[in-house]
Image (tube, rainbow, N blue to C red; front, top):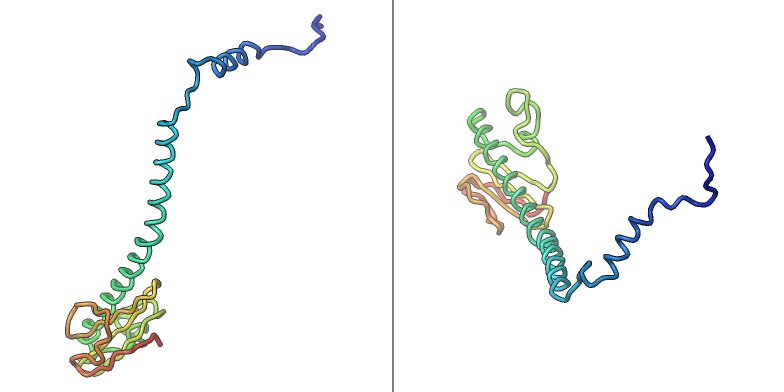
Length: 160
């Protein structure tokens, strides 16, 4: 079967005519100053939310993670003391022999522990750069170096 038509096929003119008439008429797409203002305001709100997330929320979560790690070390020290009648160093808390062939504390980065028979002091530096300390005397996390713990352990100033 052969076609008698030799020129290009114009199957789309109706589609194009519809959009051309829509774009040309005043009843078609309308862009007004209030619409532009709303679009700009929404864009600014999204950008501000992103900036807030980077500037305040990320450092806050990094500090909270460091405080949480200090809490883990404090719990590990209590468990170690209950088993050994002595507080453990970071090496002892992270070794496989610390408690039933499992480590009590994971991750040694940016952390230091000084321990004596009667006390311990833990130091950690968050990824944000804030330093935190904790001792056996309290579950409170300190942002200033206490110097020594109530049990006589000297508090580190940097991670080992």
